[in-house]
Image 1 (cartoon, rainbow, N blue to C red):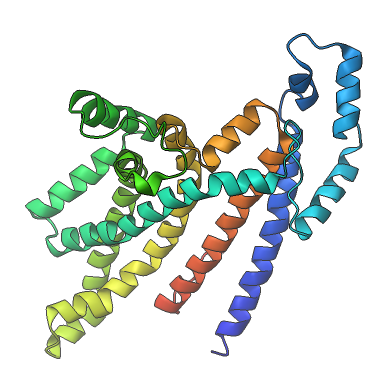
Image 2: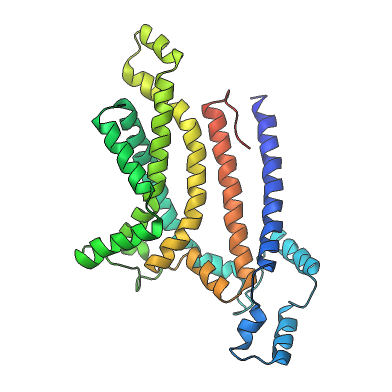
Length: 317
């Protein structure tokens, strides 16, 4: 416990530094975006005077450091700013898109852990045999298929040819839980690659743990194989897998943009795409900060779990 508290303090300080870096990086990158919200707002054939007036009304004519200071001050008070194109608070856009995105991410993670870990353990138990080769080949093949291509393939087969599932979520709005059939294909696309990477990582960790000296020592004491696998080997295999799971959830925040665009789901990914198209910088900044903070928090949690599972191993910063 005495060693855990300083470690947690160091990780919290590192998380605060990472959060500050995320805020600065998001502002710098959105400043570098091509185009201008004032030009987009002024119309197809804008008058230069009108563009100047719109820029002044939007505050885009102010120096960058002043706008950064105002934005950071607002973030510290929970204010993400106001949309340049609609005048709505950015928090309203976040609230509108949060529900569908949370549903997709939660279902994916709930299925990812048992399926990925289960396949990895099953492959490790049958190392070198048919089951292991089948799982390894299937996970490698599925992982090689890009999300967009897999999504189109699933729509072509299960929606258009067989007619078992709806091709998109058009008409369902945010009530996706009331129409679970509309979630099957998006969740499958989001689940495919993470399951493959997690299963392969758990397999490798289990094989390494089962070959460790303490496993042979436990067998000499007459401890059952199941207890060795699930009480001793699996926690050591899950330590690096926890880090992979955190990176997978990070990936979900990006992959959900592709999936929501493909299946027309009104989540945060769709909100982000629309904001980029409209050059609505405050909305883009707000979403980017939310994604960045989620990444920092998830990695902090993963490091803590890894530290508890394998306290003698080095935890990546």
